[in-house]
Amino acid sequence: MKRYIKIARPDHWIKNIFILPGIVIAVLLTDGGSIGSLWGKILLGFISTCLISSANYVINEWLDAEFDKYHPVKKSRPVVEGGMAGRWVVLEYLLFIVAGLAGASAVGRYFLYTEIALLIMGVLYNVKPFRTKDIVYVDVLSESVNNMLRLLLGWFVITGNYFPPVSILAGYWMAGAFLMGTKRLAEYRMIGNPALAGEYRRSFRQYSEQTLLGSSFFYALCATFCMGIFMIKYRVEYMVSMPVLFWLFVHYLMMSYKKDSAVQKPEKLYREKKLLGIAAVFVLALVLLTWIDIPWLEGFSEPYLIRME
Image (tube, rainbow, N blue to C red; front, side, top):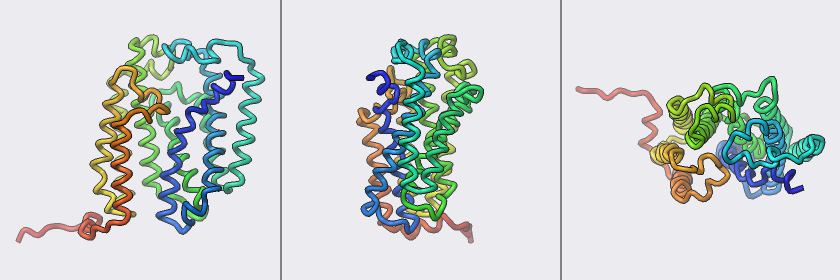
């Protein structure tokens, strides 16, 4: 039984904390209500998302067994070691889906639709003939869509009357792509053998360390650009926090070059004290700038020229 629980990766549920920004943004931008009055709904939404995520993890581990045996660490996963029955894995997958969607339907219609989209992305990412994880660049972009879906889930917990700004959705998607890109970079460097890396992950056959680094930098630029648009349009004071966000991205990229980097296991990032410190400074800056008005910054959102005479 421990093996079947392990492939559901309950230790990865911490990733669903990415729902929280969607909740906060929805509260700030809409009349959906306060967080305090919606705790039950928020908790149910979080649990539902954890269950749907575990459904995706189950098929990921089962279908990746033939590739994970080439990974120095993942070769010790339960499915790779054998002794698990396919019929029980399928049953586990279906139970997670039923329980997750049942909870999602109680949260709201659009929340349910987004959970279904999360399930579909799991199928596209892992199951042939789609298996987007084997396609260079598409692997990162398709996996990081889940980051954007988590933002939507947080938003739809609060309101189903509006759709969130496209700028923050795109920024969140690209931020997720940056996280996935740096994870690929850290994995590629850790394996240290391009041929072996290609056996483990098919997309690695077309990647190199340089292209992984360059693409991660590209995703970071896209993410900060889109987030900057959102900040200028909805709360220009947030622009003051951008240098801290840049610092956060740079530090994360540098972490990918550490030996046995935690970037390979995002669920373990809570152990990275410096990273958490920078993130805390960024969050604190956003909180303060939510309540502090800086009128002269409004000029940055309007076109104007400085006369020289």
